[in-house]
Length: 450
Image (cartoon, rainbow, N blue to C red):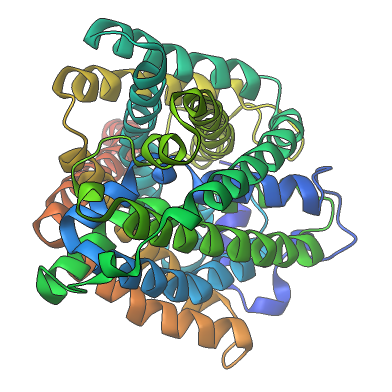
């Protein structure tokens, strides 16, 4: 209770009264620009490079290139907005902290539950994408694919247990290797491209482009994830914008290049292959190139889990601190501390989703569920920015534009928003029960005196 009180006061007070986490000299973690950029790249670039070029081509044909370019532009204000929030409010709660300061505890609980209990459905999806690539190279059946997917989730959990700084150090190496290998793949495959594969540009109309954009939200979601590790930066006000800008450029160029080369080289076959990167490499180098793809897959999935598990563990600790989860989970919420109890709970959530996703094996429906949670988090997150950022500042105008763009992403999510709506109802129910539990002992104590 002692920690919640000041938080509520700050949420209602004027901006100049906010505490010293906004001050550049305030003590924070030890994460620098390089490590932060590496975690951003991992969170946003992610496993989408393994399968999304094919799914998007199936939805929109060559128009998938337009979808990627549009989402890259949309990402500019979205990334800028979350960077502005994280540098001013570097707290383990991330998007939940922003919502709490802007709209109160119910909004914080909703967005916290969306992120913590909704987006982990992406973990088994990412692992299964990668496992399929590995099996395509080394051979295997459904059982071996499942076992590889499970193994790919276990290793990053162990890495995250050593803390955000250690995960960032590992990720710096992984992201550098990933970019280098991707450049190699694109360089050897691009000469085999045929401009004729760009026709017809929109075989499924603009509706196909919209569907491709919905799928690619999976790829460009992630800016909200690293908001929760803002306090781990040595100098959040300086380093967060720099890391965001560097990651935004690298990720946008990478996805646009991958989608373009996939369409130009594979043509109609891009829509039917389950392993587009493997196809690109084998066209240029033969079967031996599959080893390169297996390396890419392993690097990608490890990096994704490093970034997201760091965010999940910190958010779990923050929700324990703020009363949205049992207080037992609040240990490790401090900047520089390791939130192992939050990591434990996020591991359990991932395990539940893994049973569901791995048993089905069909990725597209689960990707759309994941992106609906991401769109909902974005919507409430950027709305919080309008309340928290100084009016008519650059960040505020970016937040205003982001609200419009987030509205478009919500429209693209369509009926899949039923999933975040159900979690929101659950979060409100938990809040109502918690308030009733706090009032009940007081009521009982007063009756004998009446």
